[in-house]
Image 1 (tube, rainbow, N blue to C red):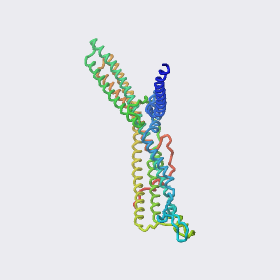
Image 2 (cartoon, rainbow, N blue to C red):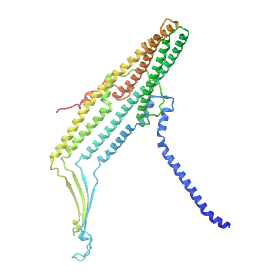
Image 3 (cartoon, rainbow, N blue to C red):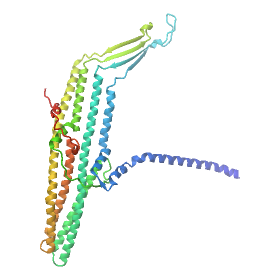
Image 4 (tube, one colour):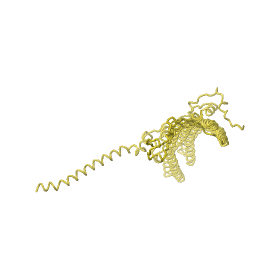
Length: 469
C-alpha cells in the first residue's frame, strides 16, 4: 500500500518541482528586467533629484542641467555625429564592380571538333570607377564644411538655451520673492486690521477702517493666486527645457547677483562679428557652397574607369585575360553649365543670408545692451531712492495713525505703494539678469570672457558681403 501511495505522489511531486523551477526562473527574469529597466524608468526621479533635493537652486547648475538633458540639443548632436560620419564616405572611391557572364550552350559539356571535352565558357570582369583628380577631395571638403556648420549649430543652440534658462531662472526667482513679499504684506495688513478692530471697539476708530483692511487682504490673496500661477507657468517652461514632466519639482532659487560692469559695446560687437556661431555656421555653409561650385566645374571633365577581366570564350589562352581603361563622355555640356549656375546661386544665397543675419544679430545685440543699462539704472533707482522713501512713508503713516493724527486710508495707500516698489525692485533685478543673459547670447559667449578685438581688421569678415557682379 505504501508503494502504491508513493507511486501516486511521484507525479504530484514532479509537478511541484516543475512549478518551483518555473517560479524561480520567472523571478530571475523579472529581477533582470527590473535591473535593466530601472535606469530608464527612474530617469525623471534621477533628473529631478539634482534640482529638487538641494534646498537652493543655482542658476549655473540649472543651465548645466538643461544643456545636458535638453532633447533638442541631443538631436543636433546626433545630426553632428551623422555629418561627421559622412566625411570619410564622401572622400572614398565608389565600390568596384564585379560582373560575370556565361555562354548557356556551353553548359552541356559536349566534345569539341578537336576531340577534347569542352567546359562551360564564362567571362568575368572587375572594374573600378575613378573620378577626375580632385573630385574626391572636394567632396570630402564639402562634407567637412557641413560638419563644421553642424557644430556651429550646436554652439548656437547652447547659447540660446543658456539665455532662455537664465531668463526663466530670473522669472522663477521673481515669482518666489514676490510670493514672499505678498505673504509679508498679508501679515502686515492682518496686524493693521487687528489694530483697526481694537480702535473701533474702543470707539476711537471707524468701521470703514476695518472694512478697508479686509478688502486689502482679499486683494493680496488674489495677487498671491496670480503669482502662484506665474510660478507654475515658469516651472512648466523650465521643465520643458529639461525634457521633464511639467509638474516636476524645482528647488528654491538663490539670490540673483548684484549688477556688475560689462564690457564696452564695441568689444561685444566685434566679438559677435568674429566668433558668433550663427554667423560662423553660415560662413561654413558658404565654404561648402564654394566647394560645390568647384565640384560643378569638375563635372566638365570625364571620369575614368579601369577594369580587368577573363574571357574563356577565346580559344587562345593569351587572349582570355584583358586589362583596359574607360572614360565617360560629357557631351551634353549644357547641364554642367546649369550645375555651375546652380552652385553659384547657392553661394550668393548664403552670402545674402550672412548679411541679413549679421544685421539682425547686431540689432539684437544693441537692444540687449540697452536693456542691461536700463535694468541697472532701475535697480539703482529703486534701491537708493524709491524703496527707502516707500518704507519711510509707510512708517510715518503707521505712526501717525497710531497717534490718532492720520487716517487708516493713508496707511493702506502707503502699504500699497511699498508693495509696488518691492515688487518692481524684484522685477528690475530679474530683468537685469535676463538682459545680461540675452547680451551674452547675442555677443557670442560669457560677458566676463569677452576678448578685445580692437586690433583686428574687421574688413576681413566683411569680404563676403553681397556682390552684385
